[in-house]
Image (cartoon, rainbow, N blue to C red; front, side, top):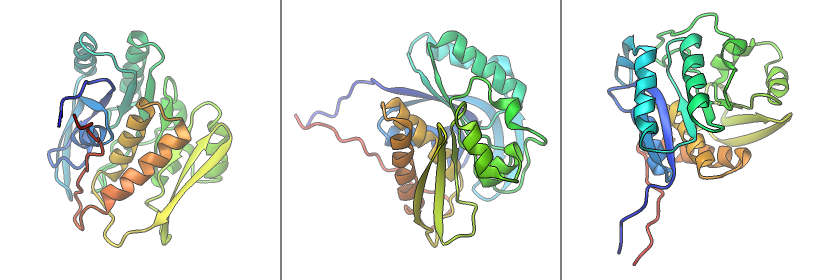
Length: 257
């Protein structure tokens, strides 16, 4: 059996470093590899946290973020980028503009982490108008979407926005027996539904979903199909343990020689 494999599909994560590995750049790279792509990681923040507690964050200077990106681009070609925890809208715009300057038609997925699951708030008063420029897809959970778009008539607003910026709304924060995620794309709504797991809560599950979706897009899937694959992958991740940290299972099948 030949286990050698070319690095032919690459994806970048720009995200915070979580020492527990449950969220941020470590979780993204695990997810990328489990979905069959090679993951690069650029650190945008250093956090002091575990799976239950968030103590503090130290932001990485914008120039250093851009230098990390450029070092990778000198050696590798990638067009799909996921951005997670980032200091503010100005830093996000600087990173997105930099990627557009150096990459032909990049696909940029932004997971707008506005607060940690332990309650630490990162951004107050941010709106979608502050962050939309240069992005290809937004992946908020329900509280994040309500903060960005406003809580009233949320689905109508997301449908209207979907003509210019598709939105994948993560539904895990609802109280329903089933978890329903919604993809708003070109005026249409795609629904992904599964029964809620009794021990399905996981630290970093939003990061995993967004990273899996980015990986599937990099593999050439259309957005709705990529979203379905990411939703299914995240379900397997949530079911992998009864703890707050989950396992990533490698789905890559190597050809026998």
